[in-house]
Length: 250
Length: 250
Image (cartoon, rainbow over all chains, first blue to last red; front, side):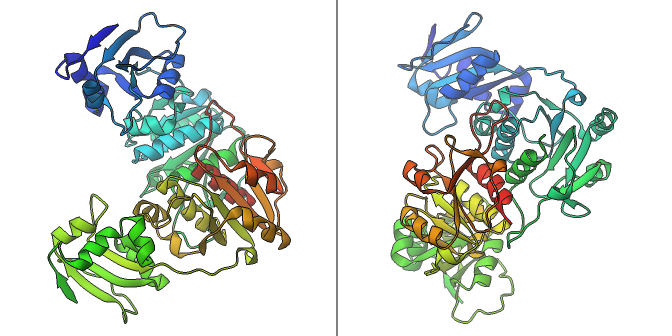
């Protein structure tokens, strides 16, 4: 275990930079914070470094060969933490090159341009709960490895394959594989409860303001909407995604 | 229209204090920010003052008798705003003493101790969308008039009656009125899709960490759970509430 006390240390500077998308993409690493997420990352086998505040007891991990442990001062913790009440435990994780093939899954969630990190994280968590088998992050979707997104997933980002892809390019492939594509839209759409549940399904959810892109909506097998019975103008996209994922699961 | 330029002005000090629960309860007023919410508050007829940043054009409201208009400087706007990118329009609203009788409604949402303002606001918005007729805020639930909660409701707080009450005291009354009480729980509960949809229903959702209180769960007609099919430990309470409200609506 190495002890680091200076925030001028090169490693500390790198960790701090992992709060930025640029550094994450360059190093293909991201940071998780807190006991729960560090344990989830350990179980997923993606951890490279574990960083512990002075006095913080690490959980008893099973396999820690090839993992570097660092003990650091309060000042260092402050420098690298994004939360107000830190637990003083962090893991630097390696991004997984998930060369998965979306068309091999029975249920998929396709995310077309979600912008809010909290929304994306909650949607990933809900997809995991609903038993969705894989998630595709379309172009223009906010970064999965943003600390806020990771926190909102509550670890679910480690539970199912999540890949980046161009959704427009992907749809013909999914269709060929017998997967029914459901878009979400307010116009030219069927009430979701009136649509037969497909055997294999890919559900598209869209941007908070603009919804699913028009081009995508013309490529789907069916577009669905959730009725608004009261006076609200719309549903939060995370809530809408949750209702639809639970409804269309088999 | 009165012009106020000093943040030392007594009125400005009061507006700023409306960001605190204490001042809101004392004055029975709360503040909404942004064009959409101000318009919703106007339609609800609860506005007392409208505050406009210099150069901000008010929408053309129908009935503005008995409403005070104030034009203020950027410094004042900064002082009273809670958002990073303010639209420079605010309304001071009067809390409504809603002496409604919960047992007269066909569908109710009972909120037992939700703590996060964003969760509460989103749940109110979703309840509105799902056509729930009234909401009861149980003891220990976070303040409806917190600026974050109000923002997350997107105006739905003006669309349906929302009252504070002791839920334990309320349940016998609701039962007598023929309303079926559904609790949400992880144990001793039925899968929500296996429960018959009641004609009149009151759904209870609970605190983010502890769920619905044990005492309440013993008083319900039926407790329900949403199955977790993947590896997530739980659902966000807002998502869970959304799935159940849409499922149990008639």
